[in-house]
Length: 265
Image (cartoon, rainbow, N blue to C red):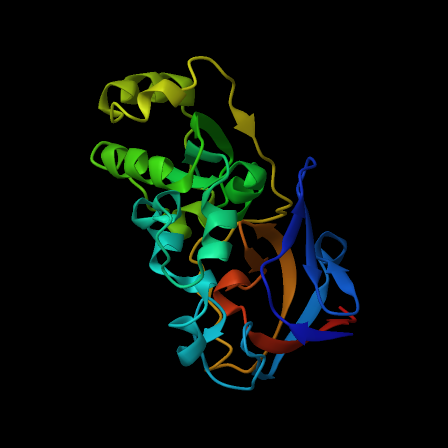
């Protein structure tokens, strides 16, 4: 039996990926629970910033913290809004400099279809694993988040920046030649970001621990269903996949305190 506040699963780039749910005093390797019955029970909320039992608003934060913490500022989801390179503060300049003024990767990932994205270089390949991508490739390595953001904005006119979570979980995917797509997109890169284009590299492939994919995935909402029991059949992206087509997005439920119990089949 494990109990703690949910945060996104930690991963290990192996074949297949190893998934770990880390709590304050212990951790759970979900790969070891494949084909076993597990129970998930909602206990209470715990904001990832103030740690109070307050309803989660977004990204694991209560409403007041969401609009105050630098970890939920607009530049997180919109890198082109980054201003630390100009020495301009949004919420906490020291935090923003540390996060924004480091190497960032603009990439193509194929999860439900080809999408463009941005992440810190240190988050490769973790970011691709979290998105459920079975293949991915770097387009450019840039010195800060702002440059990566303006490149992504330019490329979004020519390739999606969204993942269809249902198609990803159904494994409704097609292998693509991402290097060819990367080369075709080069013409749309802004001039100030063009020197950082990667001319030659290879795709990264990712294998997920899934015994059976859902045909019609239905999302578990612990606010409406505070207790659920099912047989775990796989893990992909940040989703647990169960035998009855139920799927549970760990990351979308950050800040919820849960009890997880492995039960006799």
